[in-house]
Length: 80
Image (cartoon, rainbow, N blue to C red; front, side, top):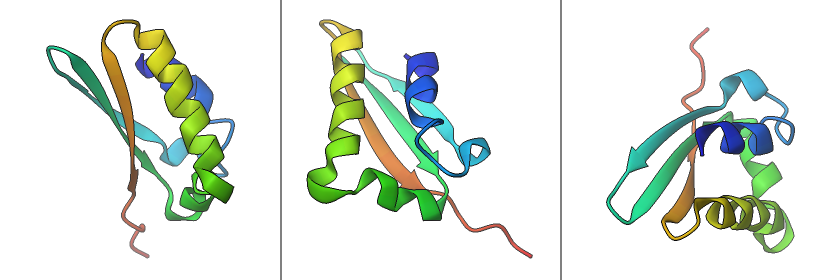
């Protein structure tokens, strides 16, 4: 699931090296806590959140009977 999420998300963002995913496995669900660069959040929150919904749909379909949820988290800006 982690590899698929990275494969879907990294080509979309402008800062692919800033993408980090923390996988939280539950008995009935998997949560993919995804950290992206602050500049990349808008790419997922386009008109009607289409990109975010599409990625979530693909991950959910790949999860089969287990529920998969993608949560976006903004990364902390790097200190200069």
